[in-house]
Each structure stands twice: as C-alpha cells, then as structure tokens.
Image 1 (cartoon, helix red, strand yellow):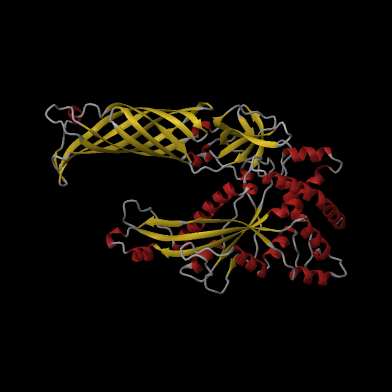
Image 2 (cartoon, rainbow, N blue to C red):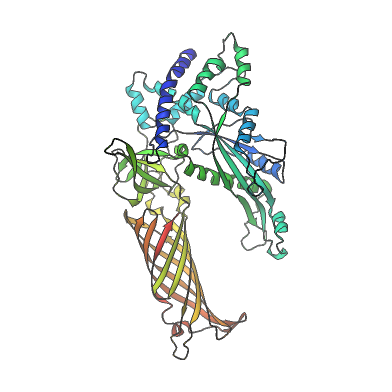
Length: 570
C-alpha cells in the first residue's frame, strides 16, 4: 500500500507542478489576482548572538506557538547560535545578509528536519505519508470535496493534495537586537529618576522569511534517492544520503519592527493590579513581535493571503473561518477576474468588506461547511458568480482632518482606532455580530482663534481643544456610512494681553456622515453638540475665578457645531 501511494505521489508531480506554474505565471502579471489559496506551513527559528538579555528572551521564544492559520512545522532546531559576532551590514538597522542566514539553515539541517516532519520520519529512518494525508484532508475546502467525491477515487484523492503543500513550507527567522530592560533604557537615555515609571523590556526585531525549495525536480530526487521504506535493502545508504543532502532555501522578504512589553511600576496610577513576571514580559515581547511580523508578511506575500470564493450575497458570505485565521472585523477585498477583448485576463477590485460572523471550520470538510459572513463598506455590487475575497489587513486606524464651519471656529485633527476587533467572542453561536462591528475610540484636537462676545474686548483668544470618546459606524449603503459618538473634552483659551488662561471641560455628542471618495477615503460631515460642565480662570497655576461665565463670554463655542473634513483609513 505504501509503495502504491508513493507511485501515485511521484506520478502526480508533473500535474501539481503544472498547476503551481500556472498560478506563478499569473502572479507575474500585476493586474491579475489569483483566487487560489492553500494553507502554508511555518517553522519559527531564533538567531541568538549571545547579546544583552538574549538568553532569557530566546528561552521564551522557543515556546512560541505557530498560529492556527498555518501548519506547524515544529523542528528540533528552534534557536540558531552562530557563535560569532553579529555580521550586520548596517550599524543602525543591524541587517544580516539573507544568503548568510540561508547558509546557517542548511548547516543546521533545517531542510531535513522540515521534510522529516512532513513525511513522518520514524526512529529507524523510514518515511510514511500519514502526516501528508492528514494535512491534505484538512486543507481541502467544500469545492475540493465535491470534485473529489465525483472522481473515481473519491475522497481518497484529497489525500494527494498534501504533496503540493510541501512546497509551501516557510521558515521565519527572528533576529532580536538592542534588547534592554526599561531600567537600562532609562539609564541610556538619561531619564530623570522621577520619570522612570515603567518596567519591562524594549527591543528591535529583524525577521527574514525563507521558503524551502521542494519543486518538481527536488521532490523527484527526494523520492528516488532519499525515500526509505521499512524493507529497503539499501536503507542505510538512503538514510546517509538524506542526512548529507543539501536542501536549499529561497529568500522571500524581510520585516522590521520594534516590539516591547512594559507595565507601570507598582504604585503608579496606571499600574496593573498584579505585576507580570520577567518571563511573562518576555513572552509578551515575543508575541508582540510575532503579531507585527505576520501582519506585515500577510500583506506582502500572496501565499499568506487568505482567499475564498463568494458563496452567498445576502449577506455576503464565504466558506472560510477560524481554520484560516479569520477574525472579527477583518478586512477583505472582493475581486473579479475579467477578460479583455484581446483575450488577456485582469482583476477588477469590486468591493471592500469586513467580517461580522466567524465560522468555526476547524475540521475536515464534509462538503457542507458553515460560512462566515461579511458586511460591505465600499465598492459596487457583489455577486457569487465568480467573485472572490482576498485578505488585506488594515491597521484599524483612521485619520481625519476638518474645519468647524459652525460653532467653535478652527481646524481639527482626529485619530480613530477600531476596538471592535476584540468583540468576536461576544457573538453568540449562529448569530450575526453586525451590531458589534465598527466600534472605535477617538481622540480629537482642535485649535483656532476667536474674539469674545463682550464688546469691551476685541482681541482674539487662542484656543486649544482636546476630546476623546467612543463612536460606531453603520453602513446602510456601500458608499455611505453614518454613526453616533459621545465623548468628554477640555479646552484652554489664552490671551496675549494677560497671563490668564480660561480652562473649561465639556461633554460632546453628535453624528458623523461620510461619503466614499475612494475605498479608504471619505468626505465627512459632523453635527455635534457641546455641553459645558465647568469653567475657571487660572493665572500662574493658581485659580483666580472658579465659576467663570464661559458661555456668556464666548456664545458660539458651546452648543451646536458643524464640521466638514476628510477621513483616511489605514
């Protein structure tokens, strides 16, 4: 039976290679987006140059788990110790030549360890296809299942899919540098003792993504020269040949980020109830680095972007879910591949959607998987006659600039951050989570000059206003959104004639309406109402008048306000 499966895998290589080449040739044409998606497998390896705190950091790094979205090619070599000083090509960025890292991977037989994982290498050196079959079945989607069920071999053909996944094996190398405790950071930056309010760790991180070369030629050589079965006469020779083989890695991309894990010292106002231990802080540092790096890679590398056909439109749905790492309020683009008059193909970006119901599909498909649901925030009509979704991670940050045409005159700048991404666990099983989408917190600053209403004073006061609060967006139409907000703010007014300043605080509430100019740019109109809480006059840090009649002195700064501006989504 094993020999039959081996023959089937070898025979399938040309067809799998042809399919792979077809996809790769499509990628070369920048105007075409592939709708194909298979799970990638990932191996994490750390580079330890025996620098400050590196031993403690990499102890926690070794326990880092690969996200569920990927197959975990966990290998014995979790940490590489080159045994030399860092061979950086840049003193500031501390970057290492990818060719040097690839050389270290080969020297440490990382390729052998990955293939041993894929082909379930036993203690006696023999291989089998148990892991290959398991991953091929788990990777299959509903369409794969239906096609396989209609074939002569039936569901058994799904097992063959595992072979093409071997060539989607990636190694992500983490190189932390400039690691320092907050105490070391404060000393380095010469921070005053009374400003040293936090503990924890800061670092910089360069990561390097490599792909194991298991092309058609490499795979054929593997099966012919290195495959070991239990009863092989030349078993030991093949084992030795495999151990001494040279499996190469292709450099894909490089990422740079600056992860940190800090907390306020005990006794500080914002200090946590329980201080994290050193190990917990290093664990948080590693997780922060992983999250940042994988987000960048998912935006850089086509193979890491989840894709799925649109399966329904009321609401928009696709058969992906937790198995593909889909999370609540994640952004996806909707594409349709179209044909020009000359016969060439191009991809048309049709719409932008976000997830609102996440299916738990973490099992082998039976052909009737549950769908995840999405709501549309931009674009045109979406149908399920060939359109497909592609993952495009957003930062979750909006920047808005505007001008108050009515009310407190002046320019405004606002930053909005979506907090709804953490609300996914609040959605009941089988329920839509649309009411929990697009919640955000905001901070807004405004500045301007205005003369008081009193006729005895004709010089302008300079005002600075800062407010913050919570808001939500609704999308009744693909090109339109509206949403209420409520918040709290403070305002300071100064006058050149005197050293006095007017300090006030207020509650604000209102509605914002936006029309799309592009998928991530909106023309925004805001109607707000500001209600004064208190106002006082201060001079040289001393309150000279506690109950200043602010609204009598500045009639237009509270009450109704109208703002016109632009919003850019990142």
